[in-house]
Structures are given as structure tokens and as C-alpha cells.
Image (cartoon, rainbow, N blue to C red; front, side, top):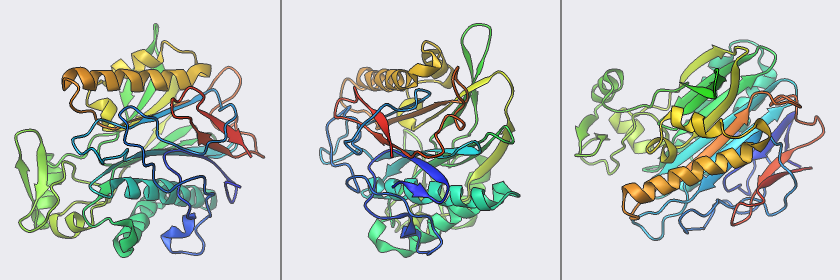
Length: 366
């Protein structure tokens, strides 16, 4: 059973065979295990594996998680995604983009532990939800720092998490790194994209000031700005992350998330979370234009179309030599039949699954 108290789980990426108790505290809600801890597939454009059992997914939830084409032939998909639901209350959606040798391990751990802890805190705390979410990020960072088995010394992940509160009719947006969240709203013709997050880049003034104050430096390598320090092997192109323990301790990289609350308006239609494998080759408005071609009950087709376009653009831009991992998580806030949260059965858990060709990706009610 994939239950965490009242929390109903849609789990993506590769799902660990450990529980949410990996955070080291007995009060942490337990997550179900479905398959291997990491996805060993190294084939470009291969959909990341999940539990092989499949039934029809909620039509308003779409996802795709594709392995990129990398210089290291042994490299595997380091992205993950996850969504958790408390029926008629809220949904928690997250995308995670790992980096470094153990980035796939770190992103998988964060996918499970962070969303589980956020959902647990939101169930039990009715006030100061921003602080509750912030504490979840810090707790996961402490876990990564204190447990060598995650290999987070010079490996880490982005984290972008959006809570859709159906009772308050707002979004609680938090993130570290550069996996962007976008809100799409109806306009006269199509959808209008609104960026909900700002990438954490080392060259940003507030980020550079913190980094240099804490002993790091920011250099441009000809392609992007990176956080460096002599003797530290990592050279991150982002200024905030989870994991990356040495860069956090010695270079001023931070796990503190930016958090904002956005009130939903009647025209707000859908949420799109994606890794930079999408955003490096596609603008938010271009993505919204693609989503607008599909009705809400074809969210899976829309997510796959976005992933297909992103992968094809990588091939063109690099002459087929390189492509980043691509992850898309699309959720309509309402549909003709049900809203994102109210549409989840109070007696069901949905565990995302997919086949190798992603043609029958779906979810199973337990």
C-alpha cells in the first residue's frame, strides 16, 4: 500500500525499496516500494522505468521522464518526479534533476523524502505552511549530509515542489536549483505562461554575495557561471541545491528554498514542472502553446509531446551528440469532470507506471 497517513501517492522516477523513514526519524510517513532504487537504463530517449503494473491514470495528470544522450556511456537518467495527494485538500507535485556521479541516487531519495515530509507537515500544520515547507528542505539536507550511503558529497539535485491547496485556492511554490515551475492560464486563444520560479544562478548578485562571503568563488567557464573553490572537486552551475555536501559546507551553496504563495484566479488552468532538459531548449510560452493543443483529459499526450519536442531540439542543436535528461510533469488544476485534488478517490493510491516505450504509461489504484 502506498499510503502515508492520509496521503495518497503518485510516485514517479525510479522508486526506492526503502521507506520514507530514510530521513532517520520514526515519525516520518512510510512510502511504498515499487521496483528498483535506481533506473539502470542508459538508452537515449528511454522512458524511466517504474512499476510494471498499469491501469488508467487520472486523465488530467501527464508525465514523461526521458534519458538523455550523454558523453559518459554509463550515464543514466538522473531525473525523478513525484506527486502526492490528500483528497479534497491538496496535491504536492515535484520534479528533481540530479547531478554528479550519484545524482540519480540523490534525486530519487529527495523525491521520496521531501514530498513525504512536506505532505506530512501540511496535514498536521494548518498555519505557517511556508515555514513547514522550508523545514522539510533543511531536514532532507541534514539527512543527505549525515548518511554517506546516498553519496551526496559531490552529488546533488534540484528540487521544485508546488503545493496546490484546493481549500485555500492557492499555490505554495518552493524550489532550489533550475527546474522551473510554470502556471498556465486561459487567454482568448490558447494558454498564457507565468513563470513561478527563478533559477538559482551563481552570477545573481544575492547568490554571488553569499557564495563569496562563505568562502566560494564564482567563475565563468566559457559556457556558464560556476561555484568553485580550490581543493573542492565540484563546480556547480547553480547556487542552491540539495546534496552537494562539500559545496554547501565550503563554497556557500545553499539548501534554503525560495518560497512564494500565489492565489489562484478563475482563468488559471494548469501547472507544468520540468527539468532544465526542457527549459534549455524551450521557453515557457512555447511549452504552454504545446499544452494548449491538447484537452485536459489528454494530459499524458501533452506531456509526451513536450518531451518529444525537447529531445528533438537537443538532437538538432548538438548534431546528435548530446541531450540532457528531460522530465515533464503536467497537472490540470481543473477538468470537465474533476479537479486535480477532488478527482482522487479517497480510497485509492495511484502509483505511476510506464513501459519501455511509454505508450501505456498509466497509474494503478490500490
